[in-house]
Length: 150
Image (cartoon, rainbow, N blue to C red; front, side, top):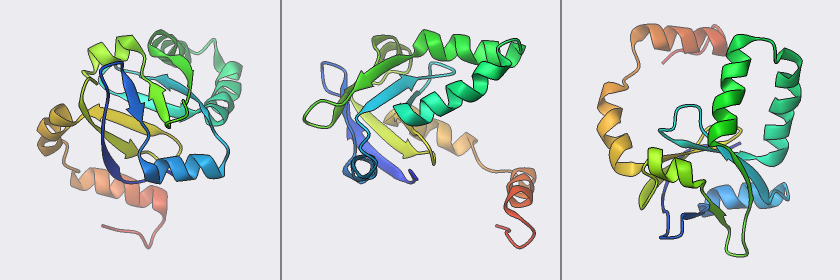
């Protein structure tokens, strides 16, 4: 499971070196291929290819659904399959480097089954307006069970 926040850099060629903590998890699963995509162009999602393929198998059953069609259109538009190089770097798709401004200092956040990459400055500007509401806490607690509160 991917968790936590790890600062990183995107080099001048658009390559992101995977943070060591995440790289160890990927190595343990022998993962070297990824699907990098986005649903909004504001951040990149780095999916281990086996996990992305699992999602595709599920979504393939719902291609007539308009929400699934929209999701597939966006993730296809922004998406690119990549492989790590021998220095544990992945090449971020050019379109995402531009729209999400992934061109220097970034933050890589573990999202359980995938990694999310944000422009560090833009994320830090956005965080103060992203506070959890009391309703958000209640919704999360309901999913975790009756003994889990904030």
